[in-house]
Image (cartoon, rainbow, N blue to C red):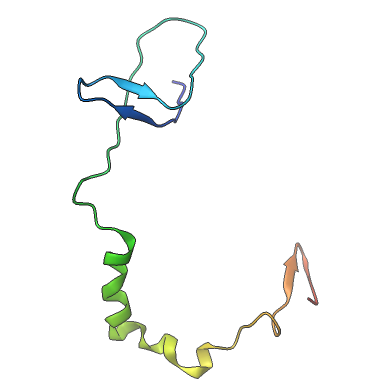
Length: 84
């Protein structure tokens, strides 16, 4: 089975209009799996709020966790490290 992923818009009449043209060699039936954003889906800012207040992440506020900066790190280019 060949899979093509694209996006589209579902009209009020139930017609799906694809955002991209899909060129197939033959006219044939297709199987569709439709993923919809839920109206009540939580936006990223909403679900991350509890993380900021969670004491389990307090360790990230410790000074020892602020050890990596652009000035003291090394770039990785394959097998060996080189200085920035």
